[in-house]
Length: 175
Image 1 (cartoon, rainbow, N blue to C red):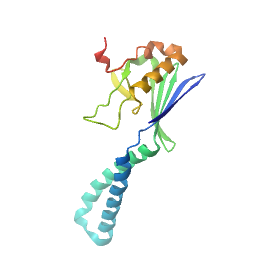
Image 2 (cartoon, helix red, strand yellow):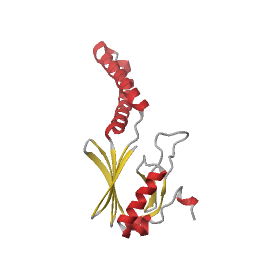
Image 3 (cartoon, one colour):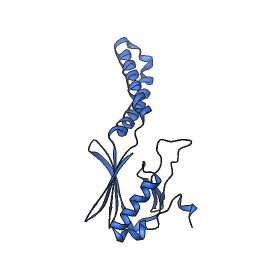
Image 4 (cartoon, one colour):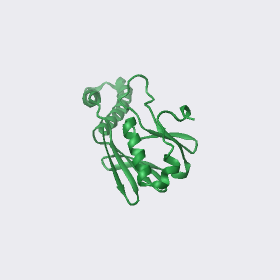
């Protein structure tokens, strides 16, 4: 897991690269090869009864290809400013994101992975926003998340009111 923190006059920016998943990087190309074999077989040999299977297989292939590309080149970008938090997920320069107003951020905490058993996504920064639980920075460890929030509060003191109560664990476990 790789991340960087930079400060500027407008706030603090954190850029996080996802943890690499070797199993995903090996199996997805094999899956896509199998999918291409089936598509070629259907269209050139002609087995119309398997068209539904190809469509379902195609949807799964698109999802897996996105996961593999995210694993290789995706980044999360958090921009902490005096007015709030801008969160973006970026893949090959194409981004989607959300803005969170500092006045509506409550109960910031370290967010454990919600998956059963061992998950390759270890953690994140969680908080309540307008009554909804939000999780960002999926690949930050507990220590890295704490360092990030400490840096944010030091560099942008007006964010002390919303991020100053940051704690380890789920918000309902704290008093």
